[in-house]
Image 1 (cartoon, helix red, strand yellow):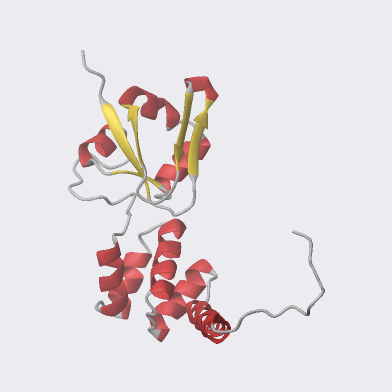
Image 2 (tube, helix red, strand yellow):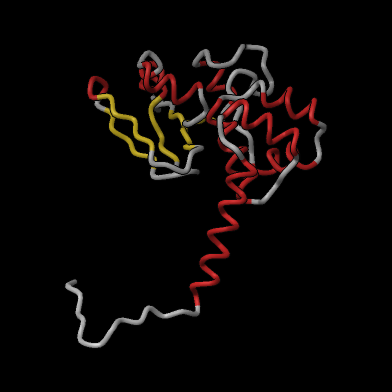
Amino acid sequence: METRMVKIRSTVAKTTEIYAPAYGIKREFPGKGAVQMLPFETVEQLLWDNGFQYMIKTGQLYIDDMQTKIDLGLESPDAKVPTNIKVLTPEQILTLLKVRSFDDFKKEMDTVSLEQVNEVVKYAVEHNLIDNEKVNYLKERSGKDVIAMIARKRLEADAEKANAGKEEKKPEGVFSPR
């Protein structure tokens, strides 16, 4: 009999680790998009571990297969699309930030985890997307000020440009240890 495997994907940029010695599991996800395969029975047992359960329910670790999520009790049996655990794609984030009305944006953001809200904040900063109503809501939800983060990013870029052509000159006869 073939062992049923579950594909688990990291949705966060930081390194994430599953460490459960009781189940003989130590898996590392080095960054966003990293994938690990685990036996279905092991994932069932790991869901009793608060740390693993938290990473799954907040979307830090994500199971793409809908039937597997239903079988693990993470989604309701009649669900066709994820309702309990949502992970937004970059395309969905872009649409939410640029196209959707504020009411639609707020309604969608109210259904995702704080981890996903932080991903939306990160995307908005990386792409310089500022819609006052939306970024104020993101600030309220995440505590992160998108406008200030974009301003800081621009200041850093300007400082790098200003310093790019300058070489650090050291006075003659002065040596610094390495």
